[in-house]
Length: 344
Image (cartoon, rainbow, N blue to C red; front, top):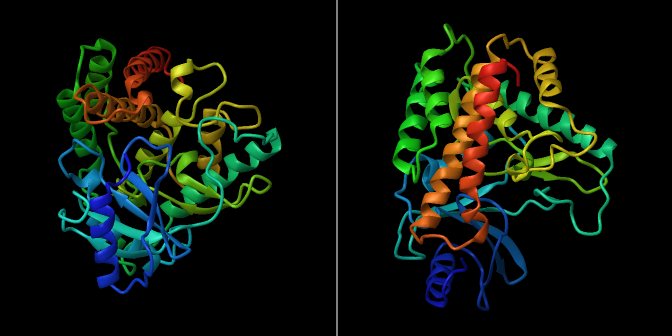
């Protein structure tokens, strides 16, 4: 959905009143890809910046809170985490474009979506290095200092795992458009298999996957920036790893599980490789990683269900969204398979 002419005029006046130099009408282009918050590229007299706003048809919650995401970017900059775009300005006045929004730096580079980039042949070596770089960036995030940086104030680590499980079950129930018994079973399994003890606490992204990473180039999969901090908080880092594993499709997985990134093509780590690498480069106990993986599957299924619900209610017309109910069912099947086999 592009911004309407009236919204662009109001946005231009807002920017001019807040120190942005503009001599001609700004150009607005929506970034393609992504299933949640909407992201736009603004051209201000040749200078490009990025605007983020919530999706249509949702009440503003923590997952779509622009002020909070803006504060997360500011806090990460203060904590000397180098892989974030600089946050410029936030606006909570919905009269400008119909929703709160914030502005941030555009980071140049490449974003790997769920299809090979046109005209580019990425090698197995590229994907192997991307797997390593992705995990190194996640581990770096999980090892940030929390107290002196102030990051600790961005979440409540006590009781985080239980709160997340209960919260995502509640979100799924509210977003349901049909009965999917396998996901009901996964929800019950999660409540019955909560980790007995959680010793670790880190700053976590909560949506870490390939298409939220800005790569240096198609020749160099160095990660220059991490995007989409809308769900970032303080909590158990293995919840972050579990979500990454849920998105990390393999070659033999169902087609519906491959919608989100290219982790399934030759050269990438397998999910077990991901677990082994993380275990080797952190001091965390991964003996209960199956729980975190099942949680990740349930969470991603719920996100897909929420988007499909908005589509079915007419709030979004992207044809991709209409296919997401198949993704929800596939994640239900995957969770059942992993619970029965105790394999990831």
